[in-house]
Image 1 (tube, rainbow, N blue to C red):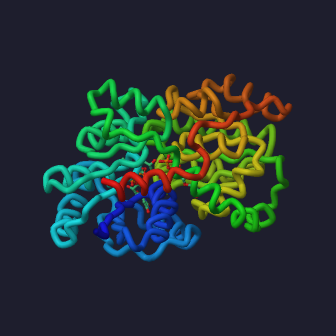
Image 2 (image 1 turned 120 degrees about the vertical axis):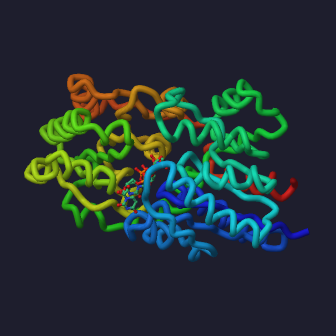
Amino acid sequence: MRKTILSVVGARPNFLKVAPLHREFLRRQDDVRSLIVHTGQHYDAAMSDVFFRDLELPKADFHLESGSASHSVQTARIMTRFEEVVESVRPDWVVVFGDVNSTLACALVCAKEHIPLAHVEAGLRSFDRKMPEEINRLLTDQVSDLLFATEQAGVENLLREGVAAGRIHLTGNVMIDALMQFEAKADRSSILQALRVQPGKYFLITLHRAGNVDSRETLSHLADLVTQTGSRAPVLFPVHPRTSRKLEEFGLLDKLRAESRVQLTEPLGYLDFVCLTKHALGVVSDSGGVQAETTHLNVPCLTLRNETEQLVTVELGTNTLGRGDAEGVLEWVDSVCQGHGKKSQPIPYWDGKAAVRIADVLVAN
Ligand code: UD1
Ligand code: UDP
């Protein structure tokens, strides 16, 4: 019987993750009716529409328009609106991605409504429960019926937490599927010329993690590090809306804008961002997705955090952890400038076929 599969997306990283899976579902139209729900957690054109365009996604079938709010209000609003959707559609599977508030909100609705739930990117743990994402991951995994892990450590975390082995599938990383599917298109981006940078001669920086940008002291320290990185090579810094607000609130925005070697931009579209990542000397970031992308593209990455939920990017990839004593960051920057950045090795299952493996399991269950 043809299955109705409802995929839930809400924030920037979700859009990349659903794209290869939706494409795979379309290849199996005899078996799958694929519907997409957009919760509206991210809503600016630069945080949402551009990804649907770049990743050739159709307009979402349902848009919950939940917008920004405190964690509790946002989660509750998404739950209330998503409940109506599942009551009317009664899907065979709901698929949630990653670790954002939309992920947990819709997972809870499925658990209460007895709708089969699959979690893509299950089992990742930073072991830091102060991160909202860690709570979202832990709870979503507890109520999921099928758990698709990106790396072996994720499988082990789930087993340790008592998840039945039969529910867990090591399928690989759909972000890498997206990257492999869209890399050639990203190569045609003219963003390097538009921002007047030379391949291999600039650093790319992104920052948005609440633990890094919400405190005045931490953000002003990180803004200094951005400036210092600029003393070694030009810096491109596409600024996430959360960070932009905080830089402004703490009086740091004008100072950074005045730095001649630091170029602040609006958040970039996926194809432009991938193109800039691929040609960067190195990337400094606190993003989850960027750790995986830089590893796949073999570009050195400094993650400005004390821990990562994607250990494999440190063990086999180009990722280095460093919350950022200034000295450590500049040492990393200098070593990358001298060509001593980490090189990546192949990661099991990060081969562009994660969506195929996930679809196989969903169709069979
Ligand atoms: C969210 C996720 C985080 C993820 C990130 C990806 C949670 C708890 N956090 O963080 O895990 O890494 O997305 O980018 O789910 N805003 C806008 N326009 C938008 C969206 C947000 O201006 O389109 C501003 C609003 O001021 C909002 C703030 O950004 O209050 C934060 O947005 P929110 O979605 O709550 O969290 P993110 O920091 O984006
Ligand atoms: N990204 C983008 N434009 C930007 C910054 C990021 O297209 O200006 C992409 C990038 O591919 C990244 C993804 O958005 O992997 C996820 O974004 P983000 O870092 O916001 O979320 P996280 O992965 O940390 O949850």
